[in-house]
Length: 251
Length: 370
Image (cartoon, rainbow over all chains, first blue to last red; front, side, top):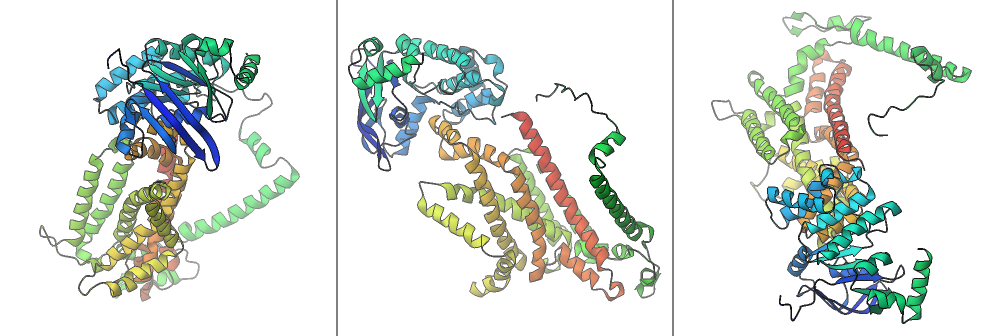
């Protein structure tokens, strides 16, 4: 891709979604450029997790278009396979596979989806485990690790697929306070390496440090979208002001 | 508690059998009374059993010109008449199989047991195991039927006893289990309502009907609907009915395991780009099946014993051949001894199964503490 006319990594165009009669995404439009880091924040129930889960179709949208890496998400399973291969996801509850070792967790998808030879996949997995600073845990099972370590394994597992885009769905919300930092440090390092990232989080420090843009959602809509500095120092809407006052009081 | 850490015991605890008795059986006058009563009952009963089964038992009887003479067993004060087993064990084990050729079903029994042994070993859990199964079962078929390699041909109607029971159970469960997994997955599929509907129909139909009526249908009604000359043999039909029956129950057990997994496991596999079958085969089923080992083995062992119901449609399994042995006029009245032995055979197989499953559970819980 040429530097002069970058193709956006993710395009959401007037996306609508309902859970039954509940309108959870309301005309959501968002464009994420390649190598851009976007933090999505908002009160719980604002639709931010649903939106990020629509990007790799863990949830399907009912109206509008979602184009990821130039491929439109439809009911076509082949397109979905391509997109899921290129989009990594990290979950709030880690979702490591408890019956596999850390190393096997990391090599499963490369071996079975990318058809990487086992030896190469393991070498690569060790490389990523070193990057998230837990190569010594490779032979252990997820249940033997702390929450922070598990989440770092989950990040490594997603990276092993060499994705172009990484999605983070509240990656630190299930962690004890003393473990949040180690996960955030890993994510900051990843951001600095130039990965395209969309991250749902309440960690405003993280947003300030690495985000190119912060998107504020409320009641299924994108209310504001701006640089972190502008967002935090000069909120335009009452809803964002209220939200900021609520989360900053806790910090 | 992690292994290796020693928990300190409370200081007052006194160790030793006497202290244990005091703490557990005689800690109040009420519990002492119950303990004494129960001990008395157990002793009385145990002594009675031992007298009957061992001390007063008749182990052998003289063989007269008209065959064995059971009058020794009929004397007053005689206990169990194990001589009937000595006389009839080949009929019980092999049914009406040609007497001179009974070494063949004997080897088949050993082959089956060997097959279980190898399959139980996790080291052999590779695809080559399927070849071993195929090879062993072929050898079993050759041995049972004969007609090749200079073996005398023995028609399937003449087979009987333990090989039939093991065959029904082995083929039955080996085929019912994969069927059950597919049906359980089908019942949970969201994208294919017709498939789900068919799976529900199958499970509910089979579960709503007793095995005996299924066996009757297979043996009596099924031939009526088949065109002339197209009539698979009775054992095969019973086997098919048994597979369908076991499959429905196992499917529900497997479904329980699938439901016990968190949605996150499915989503993580999806997010990594695993296809449906890879997701199921590599992530979901390995976890789901481990979770349901206890109910799975429950169903396995109850199905193993249910093979004895083929007695109803006249297939010569272990129980049927035992019944035939009891009907011998010379040994009339010694059914108890034969039933005890039959029960022991069923027990050995079921106990081995549950023992093995507990070992598996332990092994799996070692590999990952949740």
